[in-house]
Image (cartoon, rainbow, N blue to C red; front, side, top):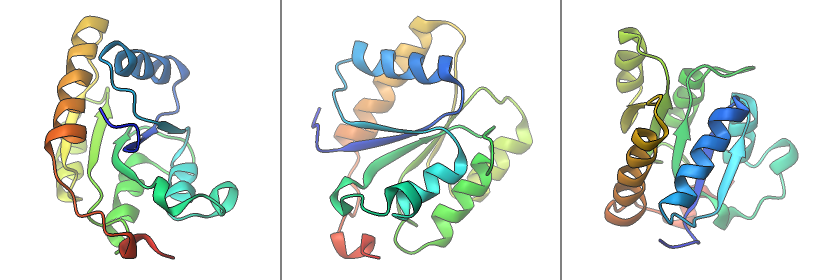
Length: 152
């Protein structure tokens, strides 16, 4: 899979972060992964603010893997902010969470999440989920990535 397609992983749990990175590697998904450990950091990255003010605009992710239960700004609020900004409104967002709450699923789709995946407890199941997700979002899916959309 193409290394120039950046993945933004928004995950505050170090164990889940490691598990996700391990599953990506196991499935030969060699894309660059940027990790944001809270909602505020994710939005700073996407909108080139704070520590990411000098980020290369070409490093815009092709997909965001977003946990819901995050410190500072919740995953649902991050999703809302992504959708409310014309520069990121079409960015594919996959909710990757352990939440089984129906209200989280409904609200995620109401905010135009592209997919909702529950993190399986078993690593092999999780790895297979990551493999399928990578195949779809990084290889098969086409997105409009005109640079003009991301200019600040």
